[in-house]
Length: 477
Image (cartoon, rainbow, N blue to C red; front, side):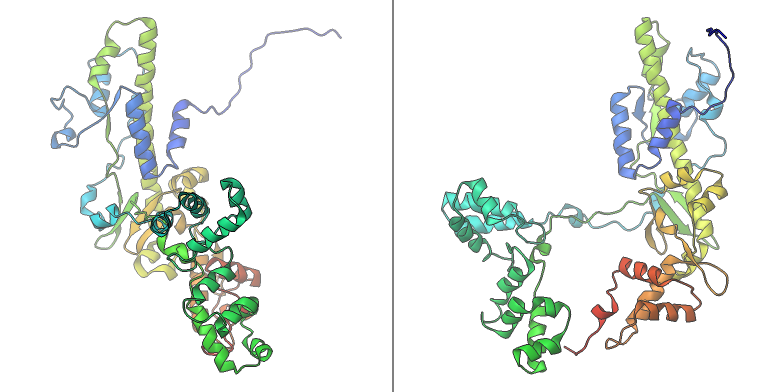
């Protein structure tokens, strides 16, 4: 049979990611400040977009007298008197009965005082450089010292070897050792140490003699101290256990991370995307629009679009016009989706809002997606980097989604509630005989929670509870 080439027509159905859909998906996971940055960038690049001042007259459908149209005014003009050559599907652009929000100022949480937002803390590096400049006039030592300080991390430890620093500075190792010794005498005590043992030894020298029992314990028995095997250490040194515990108490007062007090990390204040307000017998969801520019289409560029231009220029203007409309629509879709998801979460977690953390219910993305008629991936994107202000505090939207643990009553229990139960049980245990993970399984089972031992171990590590041997105290000190 001979091969031949033919042209045929075939109808098929397939999903196509339109530019508008791609833009809407891109906006969903953005945090508030990322969205504001993107809006400002789009206003810079697209002349059709501009920020609309918030004025009482802006709510009217007529021209506000400034020579500019809002997006809704422009839409009405397009539907009615003026016929623009650019075809826009206005039925899909503007939804009916969509959530318009309420003034945020009435529900805004207490803001931090202005001095908290402007104060700048001195970093560890700046503090050490200042001490170095006061301690020596030698330019070579200052240069070597600056290199050493640059290799000290936020915890105060030197993360480079003397040999590497000597190679980078061209100095000999003896000089580098002397400069390092100078830096190790700076405040905070223990800074510039190369390991935990050296850090503690630098600090103990300021509290006790070099041959003191505390110094001996750090130098020779640090690992055994970590295991809290005090009886064995006392037998090795041949001293009373009481004397050993006194030295251990001195060591416990030392700081293993001397640089923490000078960390350069600043406090980050969270601006919630959603505010949940308690009303008479219900909760009201408010979208936080504060600080997000309100966009509109510029009439000035609308007139340019209707004027006679060359084909190339007109095509460019029409593309920018469509991009502006798509961007405004995508922002509104993002806002409406956040509102729907937040409303659904409030409906599912009503008991948590009424009674507190232990009443948080198990919730998965599929539950919310089914409730609002959207896909799970959309809910996942919209809950990313979004925060909700509730009467119980500020929580990330993803906080409300947790797996459930089986119970003897038949209803699943949130993993958050199980973790809170673990904290309470451990806080009430005997320090001489702490509960093992298997014992915790039995205690939770008596409280109606069916859980595996490996899950207990996982939850215990997540809430930073040490193992039973680490929690055990053989002696009171």
